[in-house]
Amino acid sequence: MDSIVQILKQNNLSVTDGRRKILSLFLNSNGALAHADIEKNTHSHFDRVTVYRTLQSFVDKGIIHTIPTSDNSIKYALCKDECGEGHHHDHHVHLVCTRCGNTFCLDNVVTPTVKLPREYTIQQVEVVVKGICKSCNNP
Amino acid sequence: MDSIVQILKQNNLSVTDGRRKILSLFLNSNGALAHADIEKNTHSHFDRVTVYRTLQSFVDKGIIHTIPTSDNSIKYALCKDECGEGHHHDHHVHLVCTRCGNTFCLDNVVTPTVKLPREYTIQQVEVVVKGICKSCNNP
DNA sequence: ATAAAAAAAGAAACATTGTTGCAAATATTT
DNA sequence: AAATATTTGCAACAATGTTTCTTTTTTTAT
Image (cartoon, rainbow over all chains, first blue to last red; front, side, top):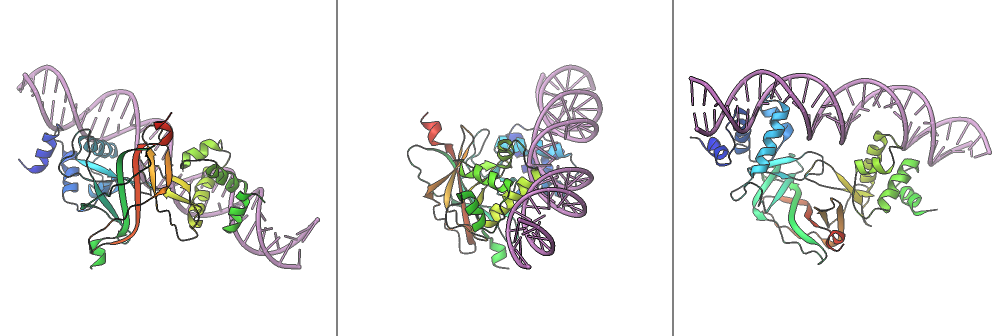
């Protein structure tokens, strides 16, 4: 049984064409994907609603996580190991390349600790770096 | 001449009702505002397009800056001093309160330094903390 | 203060993005 | 293989954002 099916089953998701295809897109992409990227890559073979629901269920199950942006387009990327239903643990930095426009998870760069005044409570820290990615820097 | 007009003039923006009103909303708000908040606060007294254009011109001039979010709704907040046309310098942490939903600039908390592998170039670091704000913590 | 020039606002039309309810199709369980 | 549960696609809708063009307002120059 291939790994895509395995991931879906492990997360109690029934195995459908749409989920298989969308999950494989994430597995074969080294960057983050937006809803529009998925529509493009599947040539609108699936209904837009299906894509939304698939992404939502993947987020719920801890298969992918969202990346905040400043341009009204949520990006999604694969979670690594320890994420699961109801708990995400993606403590890495995200890079938005200002040259190619792609967004990457820098899995080896952990989010720095942030210290806030006592009156605040920290639940999660998101770090998004704008800069130039590896391949744009070394063409 | 009141400070709102002063700010607009300093930035070579002609002084119009819309800009005055929207800028005053920012000056009188302690949190960040989304487009929808502005529409609500102005009771749709201005055309939606005007609001979009006003926000855009304020960002361009360095009067306000955008705050990335994970839910497809850009938030805007006043820049402090040194921002100007073409260069923003908002090196502070943003807090999204998971209780009241508001977003705040923590002007006294500077963004931590992030170190990336040599292959990358850093241009800007955005830090968004999800947590609980001052007033929700001490009601 | 007024006329000319420049800038911005408003309106309409359109494009994109996201949501909800429901019937048909597909996957899973027995 | 049939029964059940889940997912899909469709339709309709709502919200968000953009573009073009005309009218109005603001600014500049007289």
